[in-house]
Length: 305
Image (cartoon, rainbow, N blue to C red; front, top):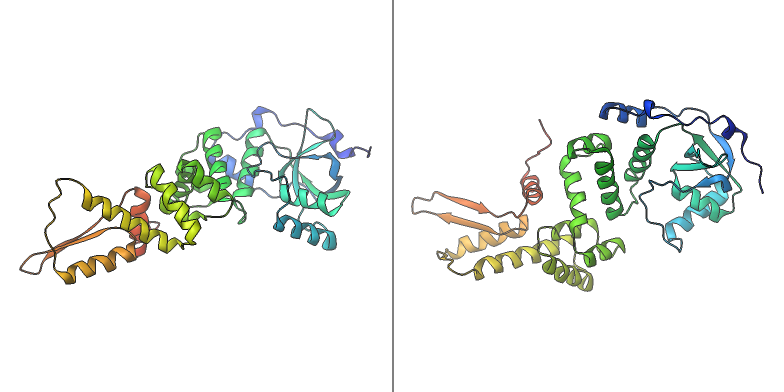
């Protein structure tokens, strides 16, 4: 049994009085510089963080094995962020660096470099979730679940969550929307058979339509653009088949223009003109997110003041 690290004996558990009381304090507590120089601990005294958003896979994936090979050769370059576990003296909970810890174990390291933080549960949760959300390799569904957990545990609005993560409100909204997808579509997304772009296209469809288009997208290897076209065609077909729809015949040139614009925007478009040449363009959108995407394609930047 390895000797327990001596620094744990001086670890002090923060009280609830030190808990951030505002959004600004929470952001400052996360962004503050490292509290001390890195220290070396036995890898056996680190435990997985309770707020870790990643779902553990029994078999290491290719990226984790590659990281383990790199650590085996170069060592652990970036220290793991931890905090003391008050209920188990000498042991530490991982705040940030879960994959580095797992890869270090695969590489056979007995000790790892860590930075010890003395933070309360709220700050620990925010640190763990924010650190993982800023990693590019986090599965979109894990990211969505982490965002939702941050919102639920700290009662954050989408605006506050965006400030905390440095993301726009539209990105937050689209990511959270992934949790409403049909379970089968979520499985395809989690297994990387579909990517987040495919999944967002399906959001405004019914559960049955989501599954049908998702299955076709995987089987036929559709790009996101192709899936957008298929969805637009489906919506157009549904609109034309609705009873009591009195559609005025349009000129062939207008029909072609409708098709071109509709394909570019990936949504049904209807053009109406009068004898004088004036008229209007009708663009259909099924949600606020789809409206935002259309405006962005046109060139309108919603993020500008």
